[in-house]
Image (cartoon, rainbow, N blue to C red; front, side, top):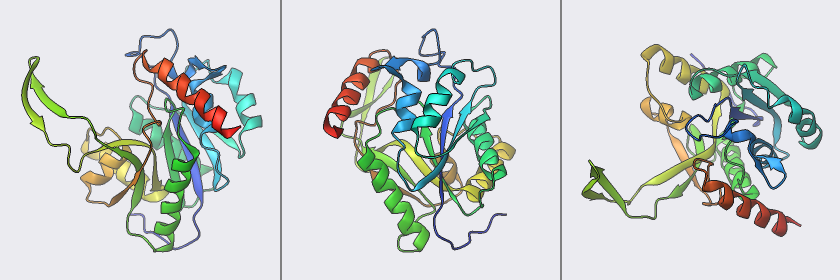
Length: 250
């Protein structure tokens, strides 16, 4: 099993872009839809511009024909080297493939991997910086935790319903909406995903896998602007956020 070693933090970014987006109903995977003159994926990549990130791995589908036309532009624009890897049938399998690729490129098992959704193009730079700050403190032993994720507190009233009828109201106290990026030690996450495969577990994100094995995942409170493209109505909202972010950044 992987054993954590003490060293200065090295952070590798990983974007999962292998989804087909069949539920979305577009002619192409949703990460390749265009918003404000660029694809959703391009916006998501550029949202990860922080000098403390050493490189970026894009995990894509084996039959992806959309990445190649934009890859050279991304490589020229992004502040660090960009690598690619082939994804799997499930999200966690795509993450697993990306982790293996990062290790093959020479990363230490003690390095950190920052995982972001391809369909979250509006990550505020301040949220990314706050998340990395927490990882730096965890790495130095100044803060407890095995990993960290961005999340926002649930503010709406939640209803549990069956057959279209409300059964009861769910207390939103202590409830958080998980976002990305989520950050983990490379070796530790590889071990956890190996266990997910062996036990045939169903997980919705990497943090949920950590929870299953009793690991501590620290929450970093984040902006609701970091929304995920899920429905067609989201496109207009995302475009408004992106244009606002460009205005305030100059």
